Image (cartoon, helix red, strand yellow):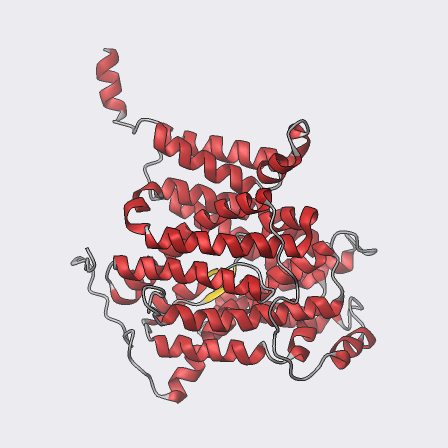
Amino acid sequence: MDENLNPKLSVEPVYDVDDKPPLHVAIPLGLQHVLAMFAGNVTVPIIIAGVLGLSLPERAFLIQCAMFVAGVTTLLQINRIGPIGSRLPVVQGTSFGFLPTARAIGAQFGLSGILGAAFIGGIFQMFLGFFLKPIRKVFAPIVTGTVLLAIGLSLLPAGINHAAGGAGSATFGSLTNLALAGIVLAVIIFCNQYLKGFASMASILIGIVVGYVLAFPMGVITWEAFSAAVGNARWVSFPMPLVHKLTFHWSAIAAMLIMYVVTTVETVGDISGITMGGAGREATDKELSGGVMADGLASSFAALFNALPNTSYSQNVGIISFTGVMSRYVVGIGAIFLIIAGMFPKLGAIIAVMPSSVLGGAAIIMFAMIATSGIVLISQDELNRRNLLVVAVALGLGLGLSQVPGAMVNFPDEVQMIFAGSGIVVSCLIALLLNLILPKDTGREQRKDKVA
């Protein structure tokens, strides 16, 4: 059924999907979307660059590509080319969910292995989107919530590592690093809870800016290092495709394919959240299918342009629900800002020299919020013994194996990378399997009657 309006809701959008607000209104609303997702979009390439030991210019280039790709793929998502595209105000950006899997693949195959697996995975997600309608029932809230919780919990150690100064840093764990991360964390909480409007929704970006500025007088970063990094960067540069070649390894691809199933579930939830929160209606099958297919095409495009997998951004769903602005035109303006930012390498260089402790203060919140989103989703299903068992076994095996990879030392290297490298993969598979095979809870009272 293409249209399935919910008669219980009477939410009316301030601006509907095809409305075009005046420029003096549309521009700040578009910038608001950029501010909400900007920090998250560049955090992932910064972390991956650090894990892979890339140079400062390479790190700046990855940031530049991430911004450019996010703008282009958002334009793809808000329009429709054939069946591809939701034609809704969906903002695309680099996905946090892929980070643990990308780290595991990168440790064995480097950035080229990550990009090759991501490219194949994007094509796979397009097929999932095409056949979305008959498989939607498989992804119950108990499954999607468990996967999100596993993602958040898997990422938290990375946030703490950065807050302490970055693994391998000579000043790792210093009081200065921890104090700077604490200040960033406190500023974000204050802005989010005590301020309103732009300041509240851009609290993460404000916290990062405050921490960045304070890093100079605190001695975490020097003017000489800053000037050298920014001065050596070009003013204008177009992000070129295939600077990093794509290589293909079956184990890396297998791990990525599972993550694309996970991100498909997230995208379905985000699109449903936009239509329900912004217009008080269910998303149509055409919108959901087109959105997931655009998500997959965006990730394959991102891999060609040296960027990590893209997905819909949940924080922007919250903006639409809060403001009632459903206009694709507004989100399109934000996408144009991202493309422009991606063509100025000096901006990427400024972000690239950001101290790890500043990033860590923000990352702790962003990663933890993914986990809490999973808890909210889990709570949408009845918390009976059957569903709690699904969550417990999925998290126990997934996170347990990721924390003790040596437990699988006798397995082939490829199997270890898939199942021991990231707890998310195991948690997703276990949650899907158990939710399919375990009998549904028919009620405690019925069981008591049978025993009696």
